[in-house]
Length: 409
Image 1: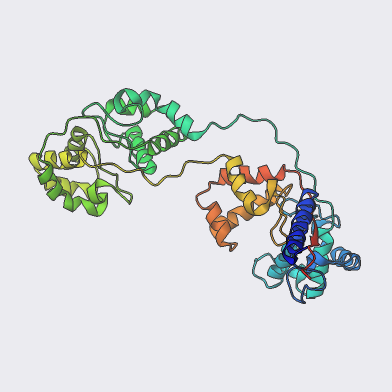
Image 2: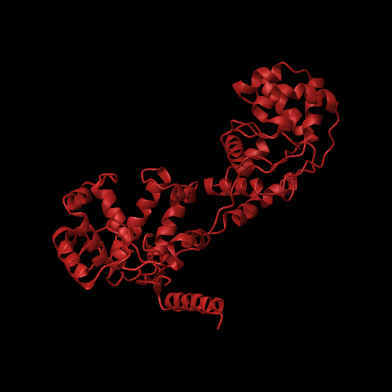
């Protein structure tokens, strides 16, 4: 046979070995062997011998078992299970605590005087144990409604004036698309408290809960923007010239990138009425009173015509994800259902929720440093983090055996 065929056969054999190993719950470390793992390498714990594991058990009994138990299945609230955890991750974390970079005094003291060899062996010992069982299923509770669907339902009463998706076809009624969700929340709140004077609006929103208001705002913020389907008399060219002074707060063309509302595509009659209210003080806003007072009725009408003709843009708002959708993203690094097959990446299946929850919050806040984790958690609410922690606590944890694929001859 030609040598190239032998090479292909060898490559296929290696691939087949790796595939069969993964199907059997074994993680394959390519091109590494126990002899090839250099001293100080963070993978040493993955290549531990039975003797190393036995010595690691003695270290665990002396230094770790009081909190994590000799079984690695913690009983104390907020203390992580470490049985079956990925060995090189355990070793790396022990090094972090030993260096004092985690600010956890009990852990710092427990590992402070352990040698590097002891850290490797105790990590290997706990990694060799059967993982904790999954947490008991939570008591059944009402299924959370999708906030966008909830917002659509809550906004059903608004459609008569503001259109089915927030695009007004009634003069004097504002467009609600293209507006930041927070602005809509604040505006509804102002009508509810009477800060904005409008008898009908106050009556309509008085019974809305904060959750319903937030859902309504999210619903409109996620709708495809469009111009109000109403007349906009006035001189658009003159309005464009006058709008130069508005761009600092409301953006070019009335598309805001800050906290001020977008004006692009807004109903002209509503815009004119709002400006008159700022001018007379019926709407109390120090930032708007002076600009409005400087405009006569004709200039306001021209500005209204100009902004009504501009194309609104979607605000920067993310559609909330379900816990399962968030977990799918987490599984890219942490493995299916939180069962990592990388010895450097922690398994989070069956981990205590009362440990995962504060750890995830620490990553979100930046107290724990990880660019990837901070990016994943950015914008997540406390409730979403709590649900995610509970989700992983209920997953079945699977131990993984690490074997090296033989190096090429």
